[in-house]
Image 1 (cartoon, chains in turn brown, blue):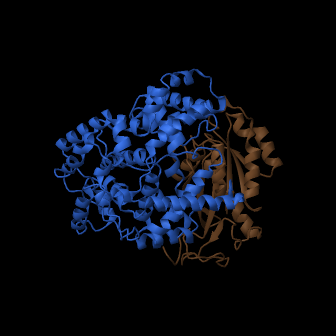
Image 2: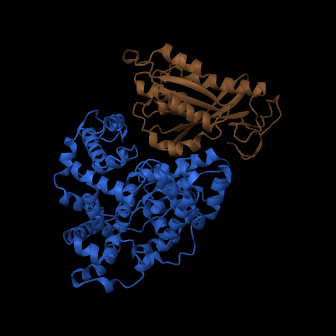
Image 3: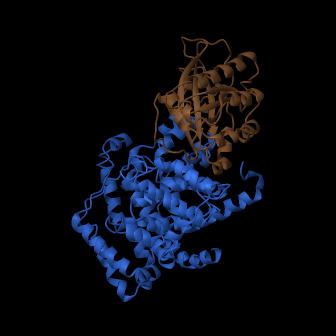
Length: 213
Length: 416
């Protein structure tokens, strides 16, 4: 693992942000383990998850940072934003307060990431439609106004979870192809890895280093 | 309330005898009175009957080899550990063998020893004031050996000053519970109730007694100290205390831990936590330079790996037996015990060069620290290496001053 070919071509760094109890860690678990953890312990500081996905025939390792939601942690979680290629911003469709705080999360994200960072808005707990406190239309409008991708998802049933993570990756990959995302930028959140021998790459191995992360 | 707390400060500060390790080397008898004299000799017997401890000889070459402080003098047991340590090195050749056989890593204490220790602890608890004021070193020594399970709850309550607070404010807990409480705090606490040790029988049932008591303890604290209110890291600490004692006692222990032991950790801005992260990093440079270099190289900041260790006082990090032992010392000696445990975990997990080579990036390194080999989290390994860290009280104080000054000089860093 110290050198030579990797079984993926890129690493994308994601962060998951949002108020406490909106289901950030559960979304991560659903995506990485395809399981719903009802009693998932609340995150203190930061947790991690990884999964290798495929976009346009390229293997991409997603390195996902799951942050603590309580306001007080924001003093330290800010350092986690650094170099994120994707930001999943989560609210709970059954609690309006978590939706109302989105603009402050968005401000943080915009301030602490780079312009090419893809921000994806997720309205979690879509399985609890009966307790809905935020309409789809309203959130969709907020997303459109701010140029965010948006989906309602359920970490419990798994609905749309896969989509949110994959769509974000596609968008990032697209940015690389378009040249909007500079792989050589120090904090692009994307690392390009030498491909395995059987899978030659079109693009030159920019941002290459001797690290598997 | 402020004035009342100030009064408590004086009493509790006495509980934090920050005696330097080097003092241990001095003669015990100087400060002892006749009442306590018999305690000195009898403690040595404790270990005559106990089985030799098996210490996991993980490669932690970075942890100081010098060991000039001879910690075995602090506790006779350590000379025995040292003796068996060298003997057992040949038996276990790598961390994984030890991981697979966690039982191997466990020292057994005979029932008769436990009985003797219980008696000593009861005698000590009955003369608590005298012991704490005149023979703190003895208390510390016994805490380091491990408090017998039967007296542990009471010992913890006394050690942290919870008992003093309880005696001083006998009805306050009930009164605090009558207050309405800040709605946001109450909502936040409720959201976390089912997420504390959810597989522990006490907390497994939604709305069960354990969860109700947890709510009460956290609520009472948030009313008592509205500046802190409720911080998520307090929940595992409170839950862990509730596993040992009635709610009112757990509450006063939580007050003491939040306001004295971890003073400032739960305040908005988390400045103290960040400073202590820097202190840890600086101390690591002395105790395990290679590990320190590795962390610097891969930009692994303390806030990324040590946040949970510090904020939750290791309650979500260590296996049960180790946690009890570390807390025995933590409540006796204060927060520096958490630093020592953290340094041992860092050196144990990233000490072997091959591990560092494999963990050649930020995330890989964090992954190693998130799941260190079980062996290094084992009770005996951890306790032994914590005593072997070559750090004096002055080292802690020096880094404390230095990092505090450093942070003051860079105001922009706060909250960033």
